Amino acid sequence: MRIAIVGGGIAGLAAAYEVEKARAENAAIQYTLYESRPRLGGSLASEVVDGAVLEEGPDSFLTEKPAAAELCRELGLETDLLPSNDAARKTHIVVHNRLVALPDGLMFLVPTKLAATAFTPLFSIATKLRMAVELLHPPRLDHPGDESVAALVERHFGAEAVDRLADPLLSGIYGGAAAELSAAAVLPRLVEMETRFGSLTRGMLAAHRTMQARVRNLSKTPNGGAAAPRPVFTALRGGMSQLVAALVARLDPASLRLNAPVVAIERADSGWKVEAAGATGLYDGLIVASSAWAAAGLLASVDGALAADLDAIPYSSSITVNLIYDEARLGDLPQGFGFLVPSSEGRAMLACTFAHRKFLGRTPPAKAVFRAFLGGVRREAQLAQPDETLIATVRRELTEILGPRTFPPTLEPEHARVARWSRAMAQYSVGHRERIQRIAARVRALEGLRLAGNAYDGIGVPDCIRLGRQAARELLAPRQPSTQSLQAS
Ligand SMILES: Cc1cc2nc3c(=O)[nH]c(=O)nc-3n(C[C@H](O)[C@H](O)[C@H](O)COP(=O)(O)OP(=O)(O)OC[C@H]3O[C@@H](n4cnc5c(N)ncnc54)[C@H](O)[C@@H]3O)c2cc1C
Image 1: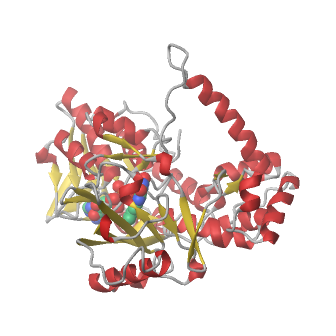
Image 2: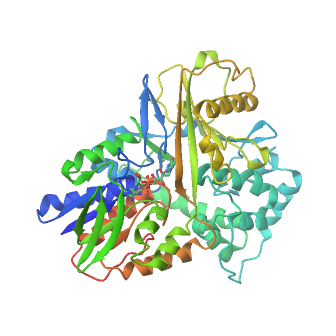
């Protein structure tokens, strides 16, 4: 059996790893992974500068989604898994140029600690009253279909909660806008809670109690003691590129084609024709693990309706700017992992992580690493700006937000690194789930085809790994009707 994989991001590499494992047991299995760039890993890219790990793309993955840590363990990276420094976890929101800490007890945008919410300067009295009254929200009996995250949050907590909470959090994760992202796809638990409980706060408190009871039972060690709580995020000591390197080391070098953009895909009598770098290969199975917009271009002549739905998935671009500083020359930074910037603040920056605080041991002592995010759906034009302009913008805004004593305007960074990610983050816009169901149905009708990547069922690294491996396993399974669901099974 011959399998082609289009795209060598984390989804394509995870698929290739699964095929390689099957190849080790069955020499009749062969594969080719085509990647248009000169390097593998897609959005995963780290560099180590004077002992400091700089992440140009993702810096970690959510621990509660097991696929990434599981893969790292399989690859022998267990001792390199690094928990986030949750003892110092605190996130700030910029409000009128000042940092305000997110109140304790916020879960998926829902306030669950009444005292912390009552005393936070993040919200006005009107919003706090609205949050208290939300407890009386009746269950939703009508099912009007999908709506935006902004609409859901505003109905429950008011417009200020959208501006200061939902929008900055989502632009930090998706580079997207709460007014466009789908509540059903991005916050399915909240949609379920609204139907069942009415009040999201009551729903979240009930879910929290159930989860705590489960964790208490699960986390008992054999001698009856309590196990250490799981960190919110997990990183790799050497950066996310360590995962890429470990995966590539397991793959067959002769099966990897770099600088090889796939330019055409066609159905053949029994299988798929894939054209890249001036040659056409014939394959029994095909995993398209590129972005959905690239997949749309390649599959347009195979199935126009499928391509149209793939092409309709919006994408945002992002920019990361990493700056290394000598800590002794800075003032005292606020506690925590960094801050998010609401769009109403009118700034270029979307967020900034104090990377040396979030993961300990990846920055040399006495150095500070600021990882700023720009771009997103509202600021695509920033991608065209030269590095010096972007670095100067981040430095100016850090001085304005943190104050000149903490972040002196004339202090030069020891190192600065800009990375641009054009149309890299899929946006799960209103109607996303229905679109994915249509896509999955059309793919099921095309034997030997699978899709994987961040456009379908989770944009995070663990979801991309899960979908990549699942796509490969399905193709390798003994012939049976196609099961691609593009959603968690
Ligand atoms: C700045 C940034 C920060 C992020 N932070 C986090 C985080 O902290 N945690 C987290 O879990 N997730 C994070 N994400 C999201 C996550 O990194 C991505 O969603 C995920 O890596 C996408 O993987 P992928 O394989 O689906 O796509 P990609 O990484 O985009 O890979 C697709 C690959 O396909 C190739 N390709 C495209 N067309 C063709 C073609 N015609 N022929 C051959 N190859 C082709 C591309 O060159 C690319 O290498 C972040 C993303 C970005 C950009």
